[in-house]
Length: 296
Ligand SMILES: C[S@@+](CC[C@H](N)C(=O)[O-])C[C@H]1O[C@@H](n2cnc3c(N)ncnc32)[C@H](O)[C@@H]1O
Image (cartoon, rainbow, N blue to C red; front, side, top):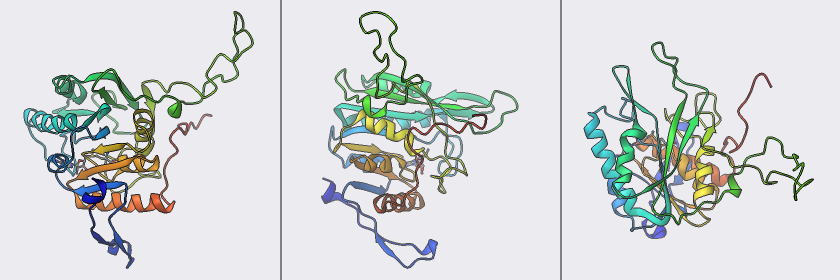
């Protein structure tokens, strides 16, 4: 499937003053500048182990047109229905969202969208809280510093690899002080479960991964999902790909990457990042790097 459908587009790096012509192709990536329903309809049933994405929030960003809440939910329902069709039996869907805001009132999108997934019989495994330090300073409500990831599976038999995403324990040398295991280490030497609250810096102007996209994923956030919820050689799809952060996370760990975006400029950046990844020159923030603490 991957080879046959591979998209070959000659790309000129004019914008960066280079005369290098580069093929927009990678043997493990199928990426297109296309509407997601059209893109997804070409893919076979149950072919994706992970569908991870962050859709527009209907808040009037550069890449979206504000619409009514009903129309927004209807559009999301169509995309989610296709995602469910593509989901492998042991696979996962991770929908990362924040708030829709209207006249100062907030509408948490995970609350609005949760029933759409339940209508397809999916099961919620975690509602992960992604917290970050930077954002708007609100005057009439508390400043928002978190968004969520709804992680759904198709069944009770799903892939979950905890070891590759363990994080360092707070007290790694702590030992049992009584009982049959007295004197032995009490915590897992591989580290602890990262929990369902993830403190990962969002991609603002001084972040090493920043591109021209206003709302890109930190790659480390997607890496955690890729490593925990898929195995090597499996396929990962992002139907709202933006500048390709999900594809980078997938390719970095030996998975196949699928994705599309309506905006040609974002797709061009995604390809540039993929080529930089392959060349070993892409700068990314390490997945489990602790958040900078000026007091530490
Ligand atoms: C929140 S951004 C995703 C950013 C992405 N996570 C990243 O790391 O770059 C949503 C993206 O969806 C794209 N988009 C909106 N409607 C779309 C559609 N119908 N099909 C494909 N892409 C779409 C927008 O152009 C935008 O780049």
